[in-house]
Image 1: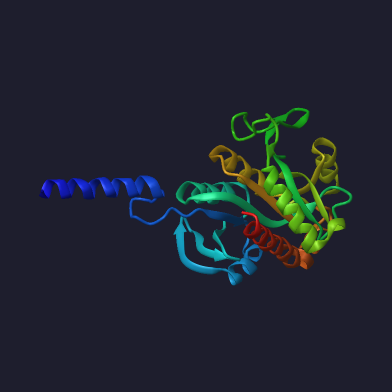
Image 2: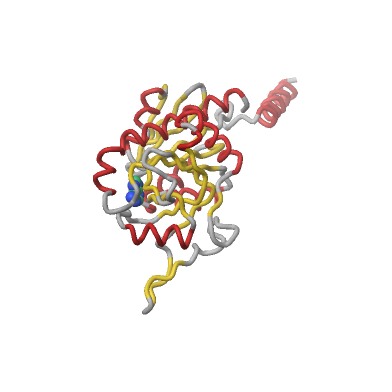
Length: 270
Ligand code: ADE
């Protein structure tokens, strides 16, 4: 009799774990939207508006776990450049149940039509400083095949997230200030007209920044849908530093407001 009861309890426990997708602690497995930036001003508004339940610190980087506009989110600031971005995004997607990733931040405008405070939603990204130094100068090559860049050259963003981000940006800054296109990533703050010309001619880039392709490569390897949103603080030219000083905070806020709008849209059609 005792053995029968024990067996019944065992079967019920096993079934409930199998059927309701619970984790080993019995709590239902919740998925989070990962929101990542390089700098504090790029997530300030988001953290102010969010209800944060817990902050984990991993390798010196804080992961703010909570709810934002009624969506479960984990918000983190990885730091500047491809190394810090790679480390931050790997911790995020490897340690937590993440359904999708949104990168929010600022960039330098490259395309002629991409003006300061406009927004560029990346459709694909590349590492513009990855390549070979030859006697004839630097020769760009794509990241090693298999490292996320399935088409052999560029890292493609998730088309549905790109559409969602584009619509959100149109609502926040207007259609005439919203662009979609290639974003070039490198470990340099670009402040050179000559280099901007190269990024335009060689890659048809709309914007340049310092983290996006790293986020993209890791997300593609982990099979996580992602998008990179960049609002422009400067034109990556000789005036870039001054322009950055004047417009970085406003540009960062634009990008954050686009993320909030995306979360609202996801609420109405998950
Ligand atoms: N982020 C903002 N402006 C930038 C620039 N000009 N180059 C690289 N990253 C940037």
